[in-house]
Amino acid sequence: MTVSRARVIVIWLPDWPIIAARRSLHATDEQPIALIQKGAVFACSADARAAGVQRGLAVREAQLRCPQVLVVPYEAQADARAFEPVVASLEELVPGVRILRPGLCAIRARGPARFYGGERNAASTIRDALAQGSVSVRLGIADSVFGAEQAAARTTDSVPVQIIEPGTTRQFLAPLPISMLDDASLVPVLRRLGLHRLGDFAALDRVAVGARFGETGLRAHARASASDRLTGAEHGPETDFGADIAFEPLLDRVDQIAFAIRASCESMIDRLAENGLVCTALRVTVTSESDDRSEREWSHPHHFSAADVVDRVRWQIQGSGGAAAAPQSPVERVEITPARVDSSTNHEAGLWGTSLDERVHHALARLHSLLGHGTVSTPSLAGGRFLSERQVLVPWGDEPPPSGRSLPWPGSIPPPAPATVFATPRRADVRGSLGEPIDVDDRGATNSTPVWLALEPSPALKISSWAGPWPVTQRWWDSVAGRTAHRFQMIDSAGMAWLLILEDHAWTAEARYD
Image (tube, rainbow, N blue to C red; front, side, top):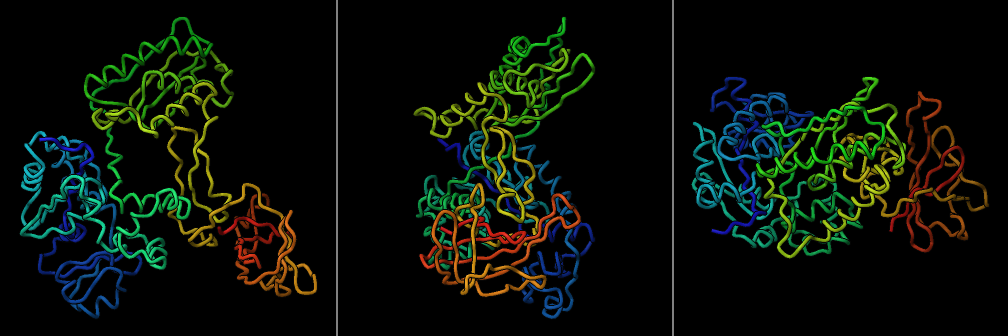
């Protein structure tokens, strides 16, 4: 039996937060329960739902609809801890389990299907192993993670396994409502654009979606078009595959160190390959003659080759000094330890050669190797109040730093964000009907109605519509880094929309709505 390596099995335990809460509270199955988060219902039991309680309902409304409901604060950490034994039981059967959330996890279908004689046999084995007492186990199998999750969500107690035939996952998802994307900021916009089904959204060009909606839109488009893949299933190696290289005499040149560690790096990669593994993240520790230790973890977009490992060691020793930099003191020891490994079958080259993505990776990796760490960067989206703060450049191959995008950021621009953000804000001039400069007083009101907008080097245009001001105050206690500004949105007579900032009585255009 041939199984596509992209196939995914999703295991779903319905009402898992309620099951975990019952176990911690020693509550009976007959007791209606509602878990509360931020003053609203996060999850509720089946009998509470039968009485009219639903997710997102206010606590008082839930108690009004079901007076006997037991209201309990939701504890995410306790929920995750309770799910760990389930994951441990699952990993005894199949490796590489990825937890999507407590009560929902995914595995690649290729290995279990081959071992147990097919996808349905694998699903039955997993279900029989996990089903305990009143705990229901549902499984969905499809070509993508999102497709398998939706398949599992459409199972019943009588039909606990749903398998979407290979190559048909996109057709399975197409008629589902756009609300299945579960994105409170994106879904309303898509509906206003007339996209009410996942198939409507999947039919759009991916490049156009990325240009309009950014990274969030691309992730949603991948789910709708059944092209999202299971990532993050890597794990720490159970066997020590690391390399520990001591230098005698000590070495003080980067090229000498790179030559000395090459054989050990090749041996490490070969031993991983013999065990069917590749390294996706490694930890490098460099100890110098002065007992200074430099320890850093490096990630790779695909997986490390021996040359990649040598490059990472060289970059770490050079630091920020560039390709010609030398260590500050002679190096005594280099320790290289695989931090995350994955099955090599998940990283096989395509039948018809490398993909465009892989060719781009090799080209960028070559540039990085020649020019040094930090010379080739990729953009990443971070949190922040000002758009310029949200653009972060990450060295090629490194993991982005914690973005803080999920934080509230009061004063930030609500979606949809402007399509064009200027690297250097454009100087602007906003004036009233009599030519007077527009400013904002201490009470947050404009001194006159904005009528004319001029952005260098273009001539002034009449303002057809405007909104604001919206005050933005950041780090008011810091005399150096603190900022106080007012935002405006303006549309000129040519129909172009602008995001402008008034700061220190000076106008600049931060972005343009294309």
